[in-house]
Image 1 (cartoon, one colour):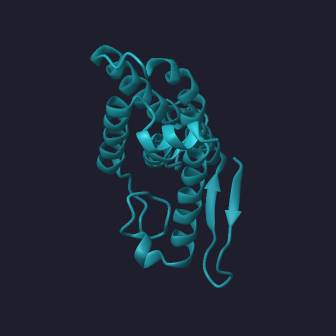
Image 2: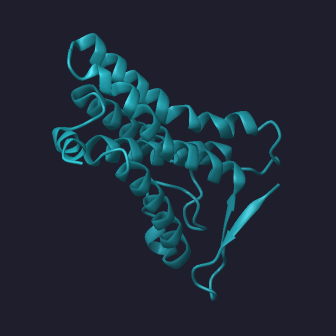
Length: 177
């Protein structure tokens, strides 16, 4: 079992990030940037069926990387927290989907990775604050947060339904480049 030891504050216990969380999170935050070019051809028609397809692709793009810990749990140790890791992956995938929608293909993965890193820093440096985050991993917050993950995945899917993956701001931003 491979884990990454992340130590922000040397006086506190490090956060051990298992590889079965880090790899799906990286895949999850990169997925929207890969999906966005394929949806660009759908922008013109704007029919409800095409919008529903865009929302479905967004939901699958957020939930598919979250299934990797479920698949890996057959080979994981019995004390592995694969359920809350799946919720974390879905949460950060949806954050990346929302950022990609409203800020563009480049900003989405960057914001997804930065939010993941910020959550790790908060969990390491301020465990009392980390207890209130909608992601698990801190010593004070070792429970899964499926409601928060489902809510943000639903919000990302609704945003992709409304914008087909690219807001007017992001469209103008890419047009001016």
